[in-house]
Length: 158
Image (cartoon, rainbow, N blue to C red; front, side):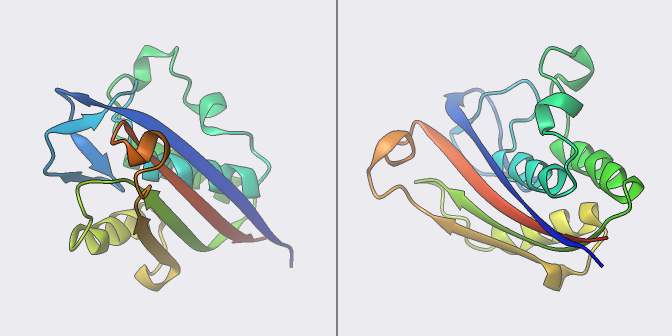
């Protein structure tokens, strides 16, 4: 048995005219995240954590923003592909813990929807996925409401 952990991080700018998607859930917001795909920072951080734990590179290697196939891509589908790669490498997902850093909107009840969407894409029980939220407390790009960031850690067994 080999237990491995990986850390993921992502951030994107907030802009008008884009939906705000976090953990596969679209939130009510006047601003959304700029990016080549749907810019779901939470799901991107989870993908990087999984790939890192399995020593399979990073999200940019698997789904480059220079590839038009991934324009406006649903990040939950990208997560499913990353999960398949992790499993093909001989690993099982034990758990994922993630933190979203944003000023507004508050995640509230959407947090449970995010957990459910991520757990489904990961192919794990809901109890194996945790999503937390915090603010930037007025500090930095997040605190000024210019963007959103997310961090995730994934534990694999293989």
